Structure formats: structure tokens, C-alpha cells
Image 1 (cartoon, rainbow, N blue to C red):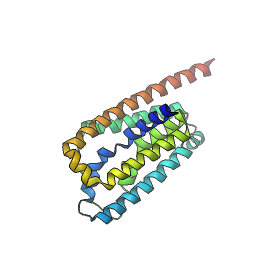
Image 2: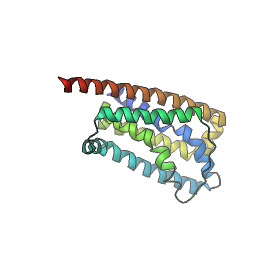
Image 3: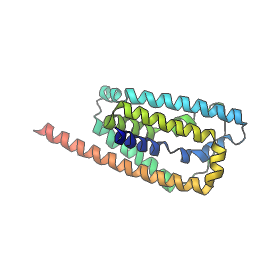
Image 4: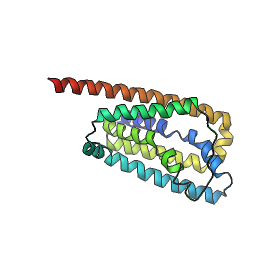
Length: 199
């Protein structure tokens, strides 16, 4: 059980990449007061968590009604994760967003915190380690993200701009590796299903 939690926790942590989100969040909110910034953090985490939990419980049901097999999702989701990770690895776009009334929802909650990478990872983990471990890993990671964003100014000062870039790149590389593993698992599953269907 501890191994399953650890596996799910690491996967969700990598997909979340809160350190990579930190510079953008600081850029969007640097003109706000502490109470305003805290309100945005609280709103974003509530919305992000709600969306994530919804996909944990209805993701496979949606697949069933759409006629999508789990290996189809692994391949498609793996490709999405790979593209996201490659964009983080080779790109370094300057933040252009500024804080507005909806900053806590868009883009912070969705898609920065709960985006394609997170949704893909959660549905995959449910299939791999079950609902309990996935929810536990999700709650633990989102609690960490909440603490980091609430203390964004201090964290940025401690890590430094270069430190956040380095950590974000390492996390993106890990995400790319997870994406390749998902694609490989999906391809093997499709091959096995094709073999059984042909017999």
C-alpha cells in the first residue's frame, strides 16, 4: 500500500509541477496585496481540486460511453504528456498574464494546476493503483501546492529564479519519461487485445 501511494504521489507531483507554475503565479499577482493573493490561491485550489476529483470518479465512465479502451487513453494521454513536457523542456516563454478577477480560475486553476497532464495522470493512476491511493496522492500534492503558492514570495526568494527554472526542467524531463512509459504500456495493451481478439 505504501508503495502504491508513493508511486501515485510521485506521478501526481510530477504532473502538477507547482515549482514550474510558481514564476507565472508570482508574475500574475505581484501587484496584489497579500489578502488578494491569498484569496486567489484559495479559489484556484478549490476549483482545481474539484475538477481533478471529478475526473478521478467519472473519467473511466466517460471512456466507457465514448467507446474508448484504457490502452487508447494511455497512448493518447501519453502523447499529450510528452508534448507538454517537451514544451516545458525546450521553451521558456515569458509570462504575459496579469491578475484579473478570474485569475484564480483561469489560467491558474485550469489549466495550470489541473490541466491535461494532471487529468491524464489521475485517470491512469486510478487504473493502476485504485481510487483510494489516487485520491490520497491528489490531496497530499494539492496541499503542498497550496502551501507553496501561499508562500510564493518566500519560496521564490529562497530558490531564486534560476533555481525554479532548473527544478521545472528536471520535472519536465521526469514527466516525459512517464509519458513514454504510458505510451509503451498502451501499445503493449493494444497488441495483447488485438491478439486475443484475433483468436
